[in-house]
Amino acid sequence: MQTSTNQSLRPLTTKINDKGNLEIGGCDTVELAEKYGTPLYVIDEFTLRSVCRDYNKAFSSYDKVKLLYASKALCSMATSSVISSEGFGFDAVSGGEIYTVYKSGVPMEKVLFNGNNKSADELLLALDLGVGRISVDNFFELALLDELAKSKNKKVDILLRITPGIECHTHEYIQTGHLDSKFGFDLTQTDEAIELILNTYSALNLKGLHAHIGSQIFETKVYDDEIEILVKEIARINDKFGLNLDEINIGGGLGVKYTENDMPPSVYEIAEIIINRLKSAVQKYNISEPILYLEPGRSIISTSGVTLYTFGSSKQVPHGKKYVAVDGGMADNARPSMYQAEYSAVIANKPEDECLQNVTIAGRFCESGDILIKSVDLPEITDGDILCVFNTGAYNYSMASNYNRVEKSAMVLVNNSQSDIIINRETLDDLVSHDIIPDRLRANV
Ligand SMILES: *Cc1c(COP(=O)(O)O)cnc(C)c1O
Image (cartoon, rainbow, N blue to C red; front, side):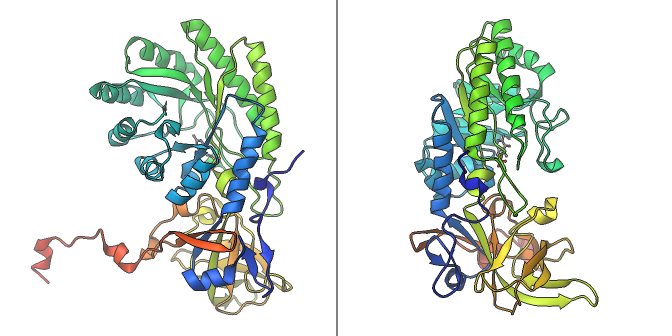
């Protein structure tokens, strides 16, 4: 089976250059750290385009496929425009994501709006900008969206988000398809939802069903099961209500390789399974071939991203661990403290030196749980050395916070030896720019 980019631990352009430094996208990472400061998010455009092309190629044998990128993995104007230029639409989960892809020039009919508690303001923004589909999650939202669409004299194309009742073996916090999930309609509730849409909610135009099982998935069978459930349900609904629903959205979830122990399936492998099962289920349940949406996030953006940090202090616990601290941590990468995520790393200015010690890489934030990597073998470290953590493209910047009142990191896009800043580093003035001291307090100063 052909390999795909999500199976690589490092960006595809990663090399050791003449100076013995780590190079990505033709750029010396030590020079990037010097020029832009650290912590620094780096996105390799070649790797990003390459995984988009894997998806396009892998699904090319099914001509009714629509690939959406799940923006929540990383949403910025520059990355959106790269991904859009590879033919992808977008899955957005907030007004902020919708607005970001809108400002980056993405055609709004290629956007799907999704989420379990969209606000009225967000739904109105989606209606005003004309997003292509809204995936409705629950009864409350059906009523709200219908009312808002009527107030605008609009009809809106929707999918129903359902809970297929599939458990995948990933971290509990990133499972979404199991029966007691907070997301979507239970299969026992879909008929009631459809009756409401047909009889009461005349501004809503149901096009099909949407599900998403979970994230960082390595098993291929869950997609097989999911297709079967969705097609069977579509056939049952069409039959019972005399409808002709012809869209299924199977969500995202494909895993990536954070450490040498991770063996995610290739995009080509899951594409074959998905398409084969779809074609056989379509025959079995006697429906016409539906439009198939996929919305991968992590597997699109993760591998192209690395984060550069500068080493500072260290602490040898007597008879215990050795901690080495970097200038970032849980505010730029929440995943290790949130769900024990693991990462691999090298020292960018001596990537080939022998790894003689096992260390714990500590973040700089005031929490004992702020550990970036629990255990990693590295060469001797001196302060000022640059750490490169791999596979940080997804759910790092997008989950970043200002904890400890630290400025959010900058992001650069590298390609063909060129580096461009795509997100500016926050400044101290940015940090206080939303603060207001009420006059009545000023009077007392
Ligand atoms: C998060 C999410 C995705 C993307 O998941 P990945 O694991 O990043 O591929 C896709 N669809 C929905 C509905 C999601 O919530």
